[in-house]
Amino acid sequence: MRVKAIVAYDGSRFNGFQSQKHTSNTIMHRLQSACKRVGISSKIVGSGRTDAGVHATAQVIHFDIPPFWEDLQKLQSYLNAHLSPFITIKSIQFVKKDFHARYSAKKRAYRYIVAKKPPSVFEAAYKSFFYLDSEKTRKALQLFIGERDFVYFHKTGSDTKSTIRTIYKARLYEREDFYVIYIEANGFLRAQIRMIIDSLRKVSENSLHIDQLKMQIAAKEQFSTTLAPPNGLYLCRVMY
Image (tube, rainbow, N blue to C red; front, side, top):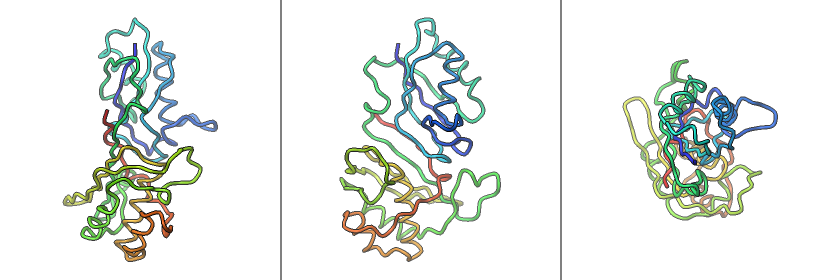
């Protein structure tokens, strides 16, 4: 029986989502270990990877469970007992056998939080802090909307076959103490969001001209390669 679960986690506590050879401190390892402790040995599949320090409010995973786990509410409770306090399963439900957390996904969305003033030591792992010009940022975000070749907006070493992605929404929301940048697309390249956010920071600071940004988005020339800090980034929605 296949189940789909929505998972939230504090990425500051882990070395990323995906399992790694040289460390067991990953979200995937913790999820797999929790499942084994309740008699579930199937492989867990996530909707996508998140880097070390990146959070999630709605990561999606799927895995197969044996027939004795018909009570999903009890399963959720048992798993959360082993995952607490930095990972929690928000919901779990039965799905069709051909459901795939990664390949069935149609859209993904991230939020990036930028504090307007230096965050306290208790907030620093969950908000970034740098200058943003709201007007410039809103104009720059519109340039990313549509189908684009984002060859100059991803980390090298990615195993992707194509760098073309479609961004459906790119918006800036302003709150009293922070900004929220929301970006929704059919998929994202490795570190794409963090490179986009850092380009917005540079436009705000006038260290990257808007015409240079346009050229980079058009895949003509690369002017910016640095990444925004991971701590402000949240995987917030996966749509099927």
